[in-house]
Length: 328
Ligand code: NAI
Figure 1 (tube, rainbow, N blue to C red):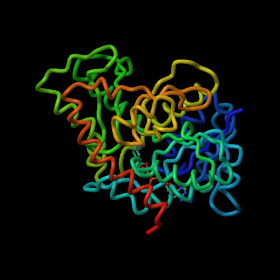
Figure 2: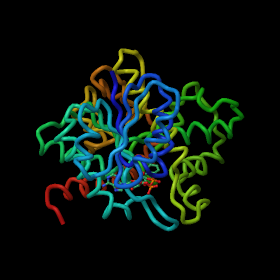
Figure 3: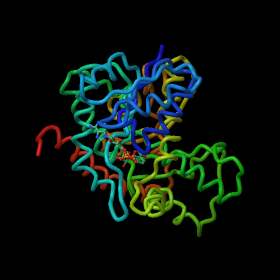
């Protein structure tokens, strides 16, 4: 039996993500938590003729307790999204506290659940979650994931259109580092199958993967950031975690994790100087079974990108840790 929870389920990402999870035959119970509108979203989804039984909870009447208890996987897209001109870091003030509160709920009611953090800035909200879990004595680094799949999805899509590949999902591209601007580093040299990117197109392609989110923010013109593509990406990652837990082998997807807690991660952390970092992760029954070192294979062009990534990411990570250790 698999119980999945979406925290922030009534939002722009939360609703389509919940729809995709409801349609997933691997899920038996789907629990929706938000500060607004979950009864309506749950009632609506519950009419869909798929196996998952849907329930919706609000904070009143111990909603978080009922929503989280018995959860196997909790996906968190709760928090405010960007408006034009905002960086992901601008969201920190509000979203840091939201993620902290939700993870405190996980410590209390679902300490063994896999946790997938979508709320931005992911570079800081994942370290926040780790600190809260540590403080609660239940931190298992194999079970905490920052969802960076949208960067991977974008890299696949933009490369396919550049090289004329009809099915973007056929190419695997490691996108590593963090999840904002220059901290996002696509390693096109390690694409499988390999891709030929014309030298004069490479800078623009990298920039598009790093700042692709801005295209959506601008096009939505004040109405938020990526929601539908993010729901797709969040579902893709959640489904892979569930499949791996159920025993499917060979599932690999990049994710932002606490490297020293994942097999093979220590060596990568030494090279990057960062404990929190996204690399391709081999998933298994316990979650993040192995961190795959793609960093040392980066070419000179990518090494330069990585230098910029390291310095940006360092500050984001310490900001998250500091938020929990020395509250403002
Ligand atoms: P939204 O504003 O449409 O939805 C957020 C939902 O969170 C709302 O329904 C709100 O009521 C709920 N919420 C607020 N406080 C809560 C709390 N304490 N407990 C439970 N629910 C709470 O925003 P949207 O567009 O769905 O984005 C959500 C987050 O995802 C943002 O932080 C955004 O930056 C981030 N995001 C992350 C991406 C990634 O690649 N990791 C990509 C796109 C967005």
